[in-house]
Length: 460
Image 1 (cartoon, rainbow, N blue to C red):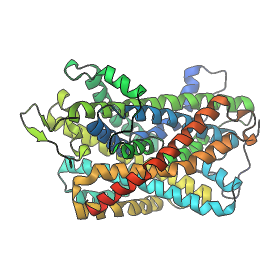
Image 2 (image 1 turned 60 degrees about the horizontal axis):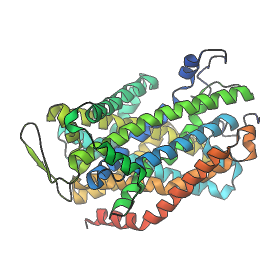
Image 3 (image 1 turned 30 degrees about the horizontal axis):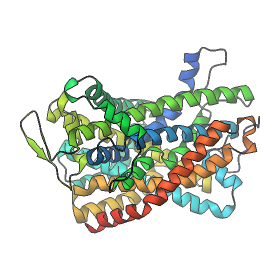
Image 4 (image 1 turned 135 degrees about the vertical axis):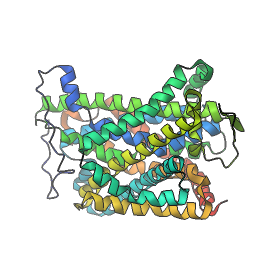
């Protein structure tokens, strides 16, 4: 097999994390090896449970019932394939995806690729801003405009928390997100009064449709929220945090355990996303109002911001106040956890494409300032009633950038540089099918997405 490539003068991505985690010998038991390799995919999976995912899943369920459940399932399967390929690239070549693009593609491609990556990261950060702002609004009743401005200073909170250790922060955040996922799963499968129609769910998964007006934009948004381009760059760098040997046996073992890590982590993300869509369909779809346990009636209309009333999906298992608080805390946690992975991904692409190194707080602040401008402008002009639409559109931007990450990833992992570890027939078929399908959906949905973006901006 090829030895890990000699890197160029820029060094390795995320140098402070590179080869810092020891792994046991191959003779160690399965669980001991699993614990050593588990981590990168779960860190990446936080981005699959961010406010952008919640916004697209809620709008899909509220507007179209179960009909777009097939998109959640398909995009999750495609995400597993792409993240497995990203992990393989990092393990076998010793390069992250951004550095491979710099080293093997013409020099003129570096700046366009980097700018496209930064646009995707800013779009993801926009979703985190909006999700965090909604959470602050629900928790403290801060007006949306001011809540958005408050999120500009979360970089200071993150810097303070990082002193406690990244692993502890990630564990706390994942517990909070798992809490909201657990509540959704309990409501779906334990409480008889709110049981979903499993036959209808099955039909939705096996009967793809995009025939209803507005479906294509939400479908592309779901794909962009699930198969996130910057996560491909990040995953290919994070797998290098393990102290691997340079031989074929070590690479094969790392690929096996990182594949298990990816499947497990993204399966959890899929269950949470599917639960949010299904419960939104059960509570909101086809209704003009919901009566709470307190007797209060909450009415819906064409301009309802589904993410701001999403806590009602938890109302059957707790009081409305408790549901609102739990939902807001988990939403805030998911937004803040995604800022960590977004910052790391930004470091990877900047160092990989341009060999620039900046302090994490500087790049975090710059990314947040770029992302906060559209949120401030639209909410300042239109008020806070278009948050869900902004969330969906931010994920459409992510989907449009995906081909620029997927095709190079497939090219590298299918090339002779991977030696015996280049893609076999299954990964070739699944990878290229995913890339072509996503690109076709992007092109098909672009006109509708552009129209909706214009309507959100102009208030049409």
